Image 1 (cartoon, rainbow, N blue to C red):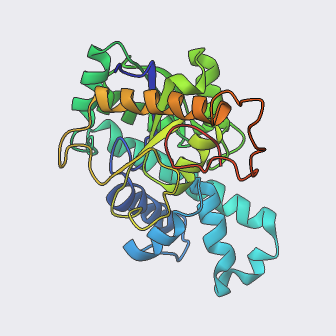
Image 2: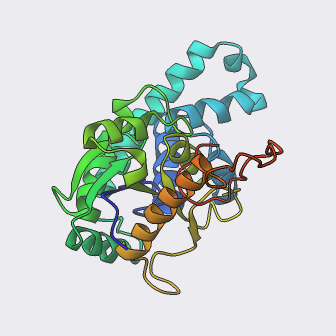
Length: 276
């Protein structure tokens, strides 16, 4: 059993628990700064997380509000409001990150140290804006720890589209079967699996009730009940390779008198990297 060649981490909710008391608060401050009479409480913001990308989240919420029905008919007007609010929100959140107000989730730094000790390359795939995500990655992981980092500025399609993961794999120069993704949400899981990666999901308070069918491993914490370690992620790569081999040769060589198979195929059990 060996460690994976690389591990690709999501940022929001994965490396750090950023959403409830980080992004949400910054969004509300930005709404107030621009005179937009919107306040996202904890529960409502949790529902909005189904929409990936902060600017898209603002547009979706404003379009659904009765008081914004006039603007909703004018998509360009909504986009302009969202762009202004999101720029302010990004600046406010980046300020919080730079002053060290947001730390790593428990167990993250221990896992990364174990991976590095085993020679595993570290990468990041997030659709968060570079302005805040890059300083957060450097604060949580240490400057230079992430060999490859793809941010929202680098892609045109957000998760659950696999573009961010495809770009990371290309920059690493590795095949999907050599790499493990670590995510916290259903859209992130879908993106990683579509790119062919075995995916560990470590949920948080906002994502625990989401559907994680197809995850190679599902946990609620990095450090409990036992710390997640390099060897456990390496085992996922080994199981993924074995699963691929079974699907390519499901019954071994067929004898000359063997009956034709029923065509039902091999069901996907959640191990490894087969895309759904």
